[in-house]
Image 1: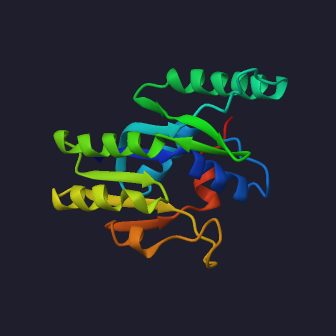
Image 2: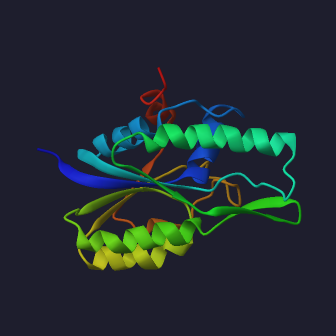
Amino acid sequence: MMEETYVFIDGKYLSLISKHFGKGKYIKFDLNQFAITIAKSQGLWCNAVYYYTAPPYQSPKPTREEKKRKSNYDSFINVLNNIPNFNIREGRCQKIDDEFHQKGVDTLLTMDLASVTRSKIKTLVLVICDTDFVPILNKLRESGIEIILFYFSDFKRNSKFSMSNYLLTACDKHVLIELEHFNKSIKK
């Protein structure tokens, strides 16, 4: 019998990786199957998925484009809500100087990670890239929980995919996400 795990996914980060492998277009893949695929690659059974995202920005008087983006997002979330053991955590989207930023997403992820010590799970799989998680990851490791990080790097300094050694050292194992992980999760 395989050891159970939870898979934590930063949706924005995984979307960037998907767009990279899709050569500028997002790969259409099954998120739940992706989580199962990466867990299984480590000999683990995916017991639950925690997916962190934020709805698209809506101005006080939403434009047609904003309404369309929100409608597409709502359809996407409705599909995910019907998957057993698939947990969606939503922050919010804020517009700052004509740029959009997710707010509250990392805090939600940190809160969920902190609650893992009350479960029977001994290994966690994460798809994240932010060094803000290092303190909670170190705390989890101190409590005996193994941390496996799935990430992508193009191994270019200061690129959007450069990975901090600080985050890598806070994990027991780190695995490079490859196109194969997406290919095994393509929507049929």
